Image (cartoon, rainbow, N blue to C red; front, side):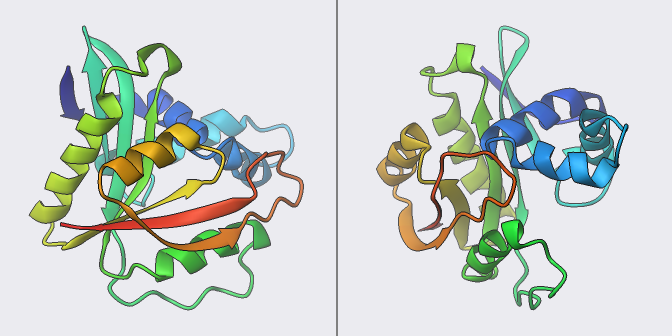
Length: 190
């Protein structure tokens, strides 16, 4: 296995991993943002291929197995002082922003995802270890992440690796089709 920094040309993989990690919530957002008749996946690819922003390839690392992209880590330093939530923020995102604000100054692991055919090979554990190294290099003393209550394998992994549950918020569905009922914030001191 090789873990490498993502490149702009990896945008197609990043879109798939970002969407997989949040049960199509990004696709739901991209559909609304791209507008009628536009390709929401192309919109997501453009966001992933840009040089700046949280969902930039510059914040992502990919695990490869035998030359094939297999898993992804995407994260970045959280704000030391979270901004107030804009009143115009769609309700579906408010619980996530509330939870993020509970871990100021942490290194926020936003996406950890593995393609199904590569699961069970220790890729997520290796990427978690890499995330912790990146967080330390960034001068952060805590790593944080948010998971859905229905991602049972991920929840087991986080707990086994020393991540502690800090808070929960209910999932706001609106017209997003998802089985999850709660978002869970985890942190781990480094």
